[in-house]
Image (cartoon, rainbow, N blue to C red; front, side, top):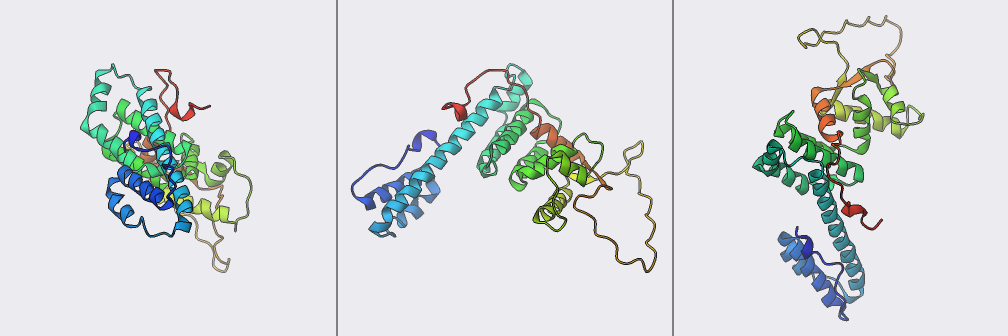
Length: 274
């Protein structure tokens, strides 16, 4: 989307219906595929509804402007962290493969609904340009994870990293959460979060490995004696089973949560009015 094609606000006009039609034409220009649809509905509202529609489009245009500014700031922050005099990095930034990652990221920008997620995206692209620890297919998966998971998911991933194995109860405390009831919505959400991360191949229960990296089978637990009643439910904040990151999870932390230092000082466009 071209920044220059997004106006500051809708044009003023005494004829309210014309204002709305003008707004729809502007929107159609900013988003070409939507132009025909927007023009078709221009006359669908009564004159009494026009002012409310105009306010909506004013808000929409501002939202588009904010998105462009966020993308601009992200690209500046990436370039300010890269040593473009390094031949390998310079060639990587110009490569079709890296440009494909950038296009994918900006197409799916809705995943960057917060400043923290925007920083994760920035770090992924920066490290994808500066290092080659993993393939671009894996990096694309990391970009998808920004859309798929919440900030709470990423807090848990960060808490598990470099822990050598940590329980769900210890993670809950580490991310600064207070005590909640076992039958609370927060407890249910926490259990769901671990199911997400486990099925997503990001975390697993800690298991010992041999010299060659093969997992060692756990010793079967003793069977409960008959007549001892039903097996107790495992707490959402269990203090027995330990969790660790998979290799994919470890690589995600390296790419998304490692912030390369600035090489060039600059004024962040997102903070220019502060």
